[in-house]
Every structure is written in structure tokens, then in C-alpha cells.
Amino acid sequence: MPHTLVTSLAFEHPLGFTAQATWNFVSRHYSDRENTPVGSADGLFGPIDAYHTVDLAARYTHRRTGLSLALAVKNLQGYFTDAQGRPNVFIASRSPEGIFPGGFGQTMVTLRWDH
Image (cartoon, rainbow, N blue to C red; front, side, top):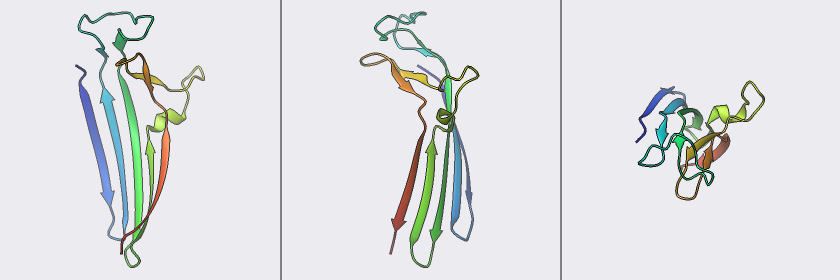
């Protein structure tokens, strides 16, 4: 089983602005009980290297109208490349049917109205 650590820092301003940054860490671990040190050809067995992600979120709420606008960025480093120019993609899982990649960045924008 991997060790995980999640830390968050949040900020709230009385004028309706909130922000949050979250760092997630998962330690190196194995996908099988035998702790197979080398990945199998089908991707089902082998190690999963340690990885971390950074998520950011911000929201502004106009209290008088109830309208709020939010922006969330999941896995910020998924938008960048490593020193060799390769995307920052990692193995998130090897089950149930082989390697499942993680590391792709997502951006979401939300408009909400509460009356």
C-alpha cells in the first residue's frame, strides 16, 4: 500500500474571494503482492513510482446577485514538460487492465447562481 500525504492551504476574503492550493503526494509502491521489481509486458505488474500533483482553485462570489465564477486547475504540472521535453505523465495505477496514466492537466470554469 502506498503512503499518501495531502496538504491544503485556503484563503477566504470577506469581499467574496476564496482560493485554495493543494499538494498531493503518493509514495512508490507495487501493484502486486510479490512486489515485482520490473514492470510486466502487459503492464499489470510492477512498481508505481512516487508522484505528486498540485491543484489550484479560486472563486469570486458577488454576494448581492448570488453569481459566482470559479476556476479550478487540476494537476498543474501536467501542463508542463520535463527537462527532455516530455509531458509530465506518470503511472497512476496498473489495475485492473494494465497501465493507467495520470498527469494530464485539467482546467474547469464554473458559473453559478444562487438566489
